[in-house]
Image (cartoon, rainbow, N blue to C red):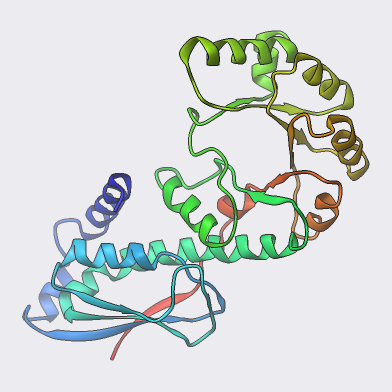
Length: 279
C-alpha cells in the first residue's frame, strides 16, 4: 500500500480509537470470534475494498476477509460485498473507519460513473479537480478512477495551471504563458501548461504565444465552446469547466472538447449506504 495511504489510515484509526474502544472492552472478554458481512443498502459502484482489507490488517493482522465483488463493480441493495472473520472486538474497532472510507469512495465512484455514462459515445473524457476532502485527495481521486473518470492534477507541482489571478499578477495572458514556459525550461520541469480562458480574444492571444498545451474554457456557452474548439483547431487540448451538470454533459461534449472537468464528483458526495452486520 502507498505510504501516503498508510498515513491516512493510521490517522483515521487514531482519531476513531482514541485511548481504546471502551465499549468493546467492556462487553467482550477479548477472545470471542465472529464473522460479519459488509452489505450494500443501496445500488451503486463499490470502491474502497482494497483499502478496507488494508484497514482490517492494520487493526489486527489476524483478521481475514473475503471479497465478493471487485472495486469499480456495480452493487445492488442487499448484496453482500465482503465478509470479515476473526476477533470480534477487532472487527468492531475497525468497523467505522472501514465504512467511512468505503462509503465516501463508493459515493464518488457512483457519481463519477453516472457522469461518464453521460459521455458514452463521445471522445470527451471526464476530469476531476482539486476540490477534494483535505488530506484524502489520493483516496478521492482513486475513487474517481474506479468510477471511470480521469484524474487531473493531484497537486500544484503536477502541471502549470494559469488562472485569472495568475494572469492578473503576470500582467496578461501572453506574459503568464511566457513566464511559465521560461520557468519550465530553466528548471527542467516536464509538465504541461494549461491556461484558463474566458473569451475568443483570450484564446487568440494564447494561440499567438504558442505556449499553451491545454486551454481551459471556463463558463462558456455551447456556441462559444463550439467556436473555441474550431478556432483552436487541435493546436492545444481543450477542457470545458463551470456549471457542468449531468444534464449538460452530452451537449457540451458535442462541441468537440477533449475534457470536461467537474468538481462536484468529489466536493459534493452522497456517501453510498453500506452496513457491517454480524452473523
